[in-house]
Length: 518
Image (cartoon, rainbow, N blue to C red):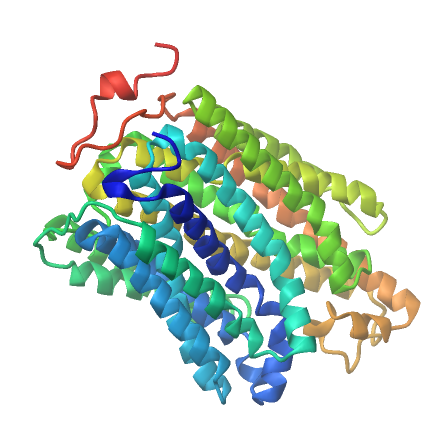
């Protein structure tokens, strides 16, 4: 099949363009608000609620991702995708009109609830339109979409806020999102596969509650409350309880959100675990690279964005090359193995960074890390889709996507705990007693605050940050070793060259997903 036509007369070229545009919006919105937040908090008089504008979005997005995957399996991919986009656009419009921080937080949660369905529905739609082998090139493009949105977000947010107003960081979604809705409505025509069934309400409630508890734990642990506080321990117990109840609900549900039968397939299970590792290491550590560039090397936010560009370009290049090679050869195992192995090298190199490391050397180390990340950008979703039956395609895609998001939360909280624990000791040891009296230690990453310090004190602070970042990347190494073991354990299957059967079964596994080389 060529990219010009698809099932039921679907025009795949405009649909695939709309898929990329939708994914771009979903990723862009996690970045574009960053540079506008200080202005927003000032205008709405809510600096104390600053972080919750982002937390609400991520919380709602993470909680709804697996749910949308199952809804797509039950009620059709097109209806689910259009619903997610409509909810996202409604949340964007309301966020732009918010008159208080409390309103904005609620509307951002609504926006996130829509965003949670966009990415997984787009992946599942491509999985229905194209065979896994045909889709390999487009999965590679998702790495480019992610990188482009991540790079453009902060810059676009800053320009819109300065030139127009912060309201436009939300309003910009409306014309682009409307264009995507129009293309899907006109050109996407998939077979209607609505199945009469009961929605898994128990699974939805327990999964959502567990994700809320886990998100609060990772957001508050070591920041708002100590890790040993009753609040954090209570959230940990709540997370475990909800997980147990969720597993129980999935064993009895007629149409579970995450069918436990998927875990009988080693490819799915290993892909999910490896995606968690990738999210924890490759996504969870990026914030700390930005911190190194701004605080230790003295770059302003704009300059730091340019310093990080080569790393993101490395991700784009590796993702694109991997997608093309996978499409040509039909095999994928080599790339996640290389991703983990190269990631170990990159993490070890990054762990050597200090206050005296030339910026060009740091950039080269980051490029290695970016290449490692790109090699596995979409491979795990693709591998899971390749062996999943048609009835579970959305659930498999959503679960692996959620795994990466879940890993990111775990990674950020783990690395932050390691970093802040080390930073406290380093500042006490390196900065002269009393030199930081009256200075908020939590504001030391701010350039104006750093510039206000005497040069010897500033140098001591920069060296403290560099020393505190070293164990962050050392901590990433054992995680990547685990990822390497997981990917080495994956079967070396060929991607199918035919679609799933309409009856929900897989094509002949001997003919279509035989081990590579047979």
